[in-house]
Image (cartoon, rainbow, N blue to C red; front, side, top):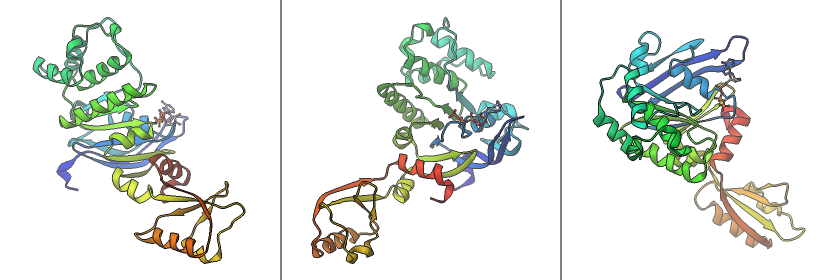
Length: 308
Ligand SMILES: Nc1ncnc2c1ncn2[C@@H]1O[C@H](COP(=O)(O)OP(=O)(O)OP(=O)(O)O)[C@@H](O)[C@H]1O
């Protein structure tokens, strides 16, 4: 990876809260310009702590963070200006109008007024028609968009979305995914935390998994699915039948429900298994193929640490 492509670099970051647990343990991570990274992890894994450190809201106990060339400690203002943060909870001023809210947020970063930019940004978020509406009159989904608009008002290059679709219905969630795609096509790098594995599967380029304060994995979603999302074949044999020893070489495992599970290894291996089954005269009552989902991978990684 070329260094100029890296917009965010996290190196050996650790955090121990006063009287608290070790929330992060030596996390290192590089983010490329224009990518969408989904951070997955169970409650309390350290996701919000990591985001809060990068955004300068929590100070790290160790390690360093460089945002678009700026150190978050020695060059705090420039680092912070490169970042937009959409917090987990909706915190908005109910009587404020949408366009005013965006203008105000921009002003907080000392940026000159630029209504043309705000119009483009609000249009991308489907909020331009609502620019004169008071926040309190908007639906829950629109309020979330206003949060994003406020976070984008100062033209940050990286956007953090902390659980953007928590408690949101399926339709709104898909809407939000479309918004994220649109932002990326406008050149924004996006890091989102989520509990919804299908969210990561749907929109992320790379997936990072945090568990117990450690980043146990960061990988391209496609290669992760190819590497660990292997295909399996589930065989149900005739009543009382067992696998004959001649099939041992295929490495099938017996499940608690009495079915046999075969993991596809290489091209042609399935044909060999089926031929051996037929030759051995085994009755196969049912055959089902399935692909391990990101959810299965996630559960296994969180249980076993990094060595899955
Ligand atoms: N201000 C704080 N003071 C003390 N401990 C904290 C503080 N903030 C977080 N923690 C602890 O640090 C650990 C990591 O919490 P964090 O909020 O970063 O996890 P998370 O992955 O974002 O969880 P969730 O998915 O529930 O939001 C937890 O054990 C939490 O209780």
